[in-house]
Image 1 (cartoon, rainbow over the protein chains, first blue to last red):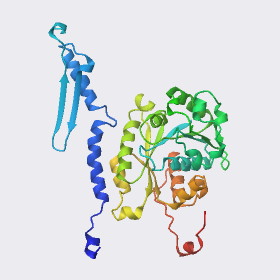
Image 2 (cartoon, helix red, strand yellow; image 1 turned 90 degrees about the vertical axis):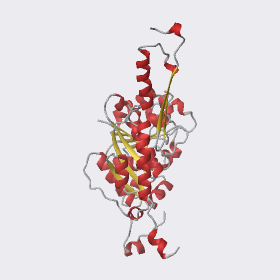
Image 3 (tube, rainbow over the protein chains, first blue to last red; image 1 turned 135 degrees about the horizontal axis):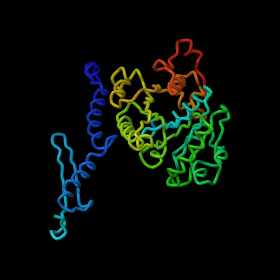
Image 4 (cartoon, each protein chain N blue to C red; image 1 turned 45 degrees about the vertical axis):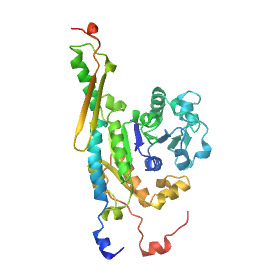
Length: 87
Length: 271
């Protein structure tokens, strides 16, 4: 190692700190102390759709994919055949 | 009023058992009646770190299942009279621990002790959630290292949502215990600093335990570091932390083992 490397070496702790801050901001949205966002969305979607159409609890699927630039929310609600609908 | 304290971390190997023994020892030495409980069913180690491994007859699961009385399972420390250990089972399945059973044992222990310190297993599975379930106070043991900080964040989330207190709309009092800290490396920018970890986890600091040979030396001989070498840097740091747990206000310092020239010449000893 030459002398210049010794002076130019970037310290690693600030990198650790920055990586943790980004990661935890992301993870706290999914797990952590607050209620699970996906579970919350699922319940509310179930309630709204259920006001108009009879849906079964396990026929509602909510998936969230988070990316660095773009996140997507995928909602899939299976509605039973017309004869079984409420109104 | 007895306090139930859980020592937890998520990640393994950060110093939960060492800290349980050291804080238990420090609190007991200050006159408090203390029991330390090992919740790590199948991988118990608190008995070994406390030097009581050859005295285990009954364990927590025996008491939970009614096969032994609490007094038969409690092991009284030979050095400090008001310190006791309730070991985990080494052979039984961890599913033998039930929430009601643990609650019953804790209620009995509250009649006899001032502090009930629960040494949590690593992870977020049953043993860990049961260890924190009935806690009033939590000590989150964290190393200044990315994976430990991340896991501590997860555990803090669980303390705020999955404990009895949280479910009743109350809060578990949470404290950060930063262990294996090296102030020189932190100053050089090679290790997360105390303030970095505090800012990320945002819970109050209970103490900073410096990286030290004394910790291994104490576990080698089966003694809490606060008993084996109370004057050592980690010993003093744990004593300060124990005083803060009791509500005393103690200035936050990072004790050091660094010796002067005379200390270097004459202070060396074998252990």
